[in-house]
Length: 69
Length: 210
Image 1 (tube, rainbow over the protein chains, first blue to last red):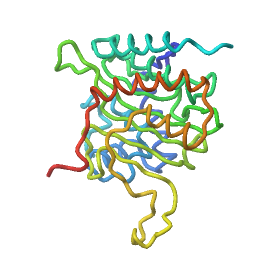
Image 2 (image 1 turned 30 degrees about the horizontal axis):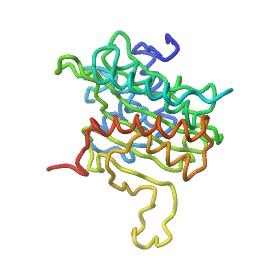
Image 3 (image 1 turned 90 degrees about the vertical axis):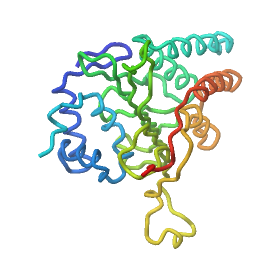
Image 4 (image 1 turned 30 degrees about the vertical axis):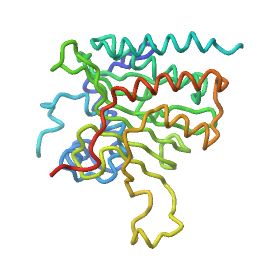
């Protein structure tokens, strides 16, 4: 993580680690499953994890975490 | 410390708004600076700041948030405001105009957000049937039978897109969160900033079209 006054710059690995930790802590699921449920419109109360969804939105569309199982 | 000159702050708001509207790479840091300016003039506890989070090497997208995933903004009342959002520079426009894909403002008692009080969410293109802009409150309805078993906190009240300035006013006027500046300073600043927001804010439908 590179931190400037106003900006935090993350590598993909750092971003995925954040998503993984918080998805498991808040919902008890893997980040991949949380994001898949969201994209399929099945995620209950997405606003509760809006910060994680915004973070995941930084990943490119073809990132492996969005791939179907 | 004397209160800053409102005229100086208003000029800064206008300058930042102009930079945001011009698009291009300077729009993202200008958006953050304007957001921090209105938060710092009002409810934000000293030493707290909102950050832009970027995924290297892409500098065309950013998330708004705290330094870590569990770091909402600390307020002057000892509670927290979780501000999150996704911003991007639209590659289909020239120059690349700044667009806001989603925002979420959650007032909460604890750092983890388990004891949240209310939340405003906005999604430009929601993948679900909830209203694209909605409000939720973590409370109980006096006439609970109207909800037929559904907890009030799971009701998504449709709203227009709500500005951060409106949320700040709600915190100050209704929840009595202390402000860093006198009202003679922060009211004109919020008004100027919100006026600029309302000129360009995308408004979403209250539900799916099909």
